[in-house]
Length: 320
Ligand code: ADP
Ligand code: MG
Image (tube, rainbow, N blue to C red; front, side):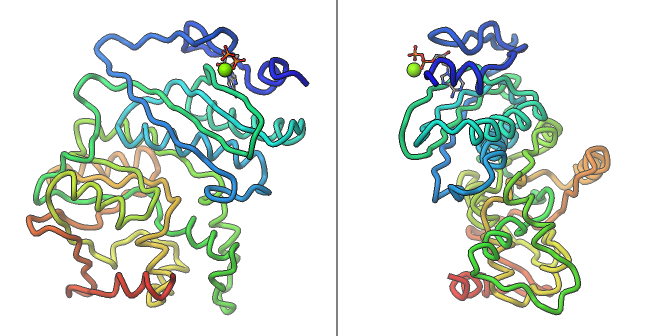
């Protein structure tokens, strides 16, 4: 199959939002009046970001989803993507499934694939995502104010625990009645970008980030950029029932606090916004949990049963 036919067959779909999509030397889009273009790129490398033998559908979904998550974290509307892909061989069945997963995510989040590049090489997928936000309204990392509430969407740690089980670094409690892995796998394989939440948080959140490297690391980025510290309340962390019951285990703490791949949004907001945030949570049927407060003292302090707790690092070390 020629490169032209491959692009035509697997990567050319209608692009209703663009003036010109795949097929020319470049795509043409307009930015809506009064808006800024928001741009982000993420590369997914086989063996590092996904297992090369994972289902191609899931690889396609996730390679776009993790990019959309960055646009969501900016409070922007995702609109366009480009896809640069290196393929070791032309495998029609694989490409069918990959593009099906990619476009399923694109359709769910209303993103047009408007261009890219296709080449032979070790499997490597680089997506650039573009979105729009009204000028000055983007949610940035540097806006948190001292005394803000810290919030997190969804559930933390499920993706990391699924990965730990797949890699045989964690053995699930044999006495636990339910098959948790089946419930957690979707978090790892098909993360749901929180685009609607990002949009709803404009004018409400003072800062925002998507949690791709674990809560501690990513909240740490907000604190550093905003030049403040924080207390987080461990009992408040939104974890699955299994994790709640095993929170004494360092591996479980590590997944909830430092596990990657959640793609939830962590954001700060003034305390007087609590009711508004609860309404957003109800409207979007998405768990939003208050997990801590920013403070003047730099650094991140965990609080457990009303006392400062220093086991975060231990949890990390035990696991590594
Ligand atoms: P050129 O040689 O001019 O760069 P290409 O042959 O690389 O053109 O690409 C032809 C068209 O197909 C361009 O519009 C490009 O954006 C698009 N394209 C190439 N690869 C992909 C891909 N993987 N997904 C989407 N569009 C692609
Ligand atoms: Mg090219």
